[in-house]
Length: 45
Image (cartoon, rainbow, N blue to C red; front, side, top):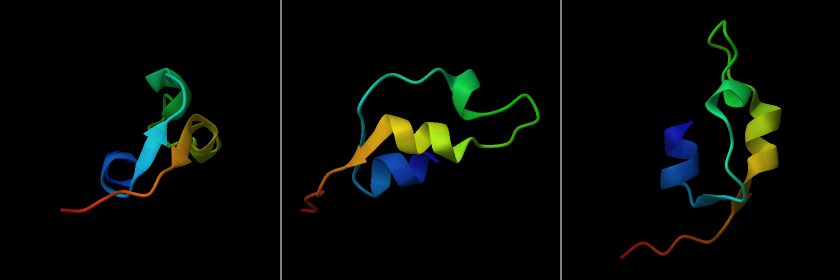
């Protein structure tokens, strides 16, 4: 999840509670993540 958000150019649109992203069973809630992020073109230098 970190790589998707930080390394692929996604930006958080709003703060997301970690408990809404990962369930108590350790499963990732992709719907919550896609609702909280947007894609921006990253500039690699």
